[in-house]
Image 1 (cartoon, rainbow, N blue to C red):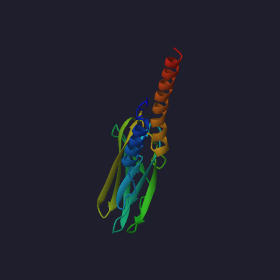
Image 2: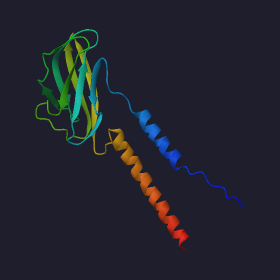
Image 3: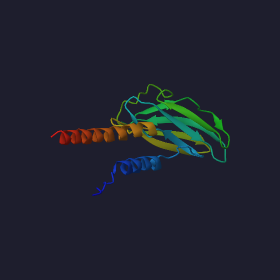
Image 4: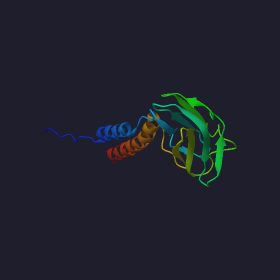
Length: 163
């Protein structure tokens, strides 16, 4: 008599998880405006901010980083710089800001004022728990639980087989 083989859901679950991770990734490049990358980081981590001019030129007049307590930290890096249309400039957070370490948990706000009178703002969070930024980190986190589950399944089979 032919025995029916059950379809194992493990490959389907793994592929679904990988597909969800890949579709959740976004391209953080921006043609115009301010972006901080990553948008969530660990205590004392680092981030990069990028300001890109659109179709008109911008002159940076002030750069300010506001911590979760409301304290303001200024930067003289790139102040006075004129960005031509389509140009971008970057800041390293916290290195480019006066006496700043990212040790306060919560939402930080970056404000950049330009001439003509535009204010660009972006937020990022400092957290105790951080989701991996790269696809390799996400795969490592997901595969660790799958490997653990597979190990328990294998041990259960071995124990049942030896009874």
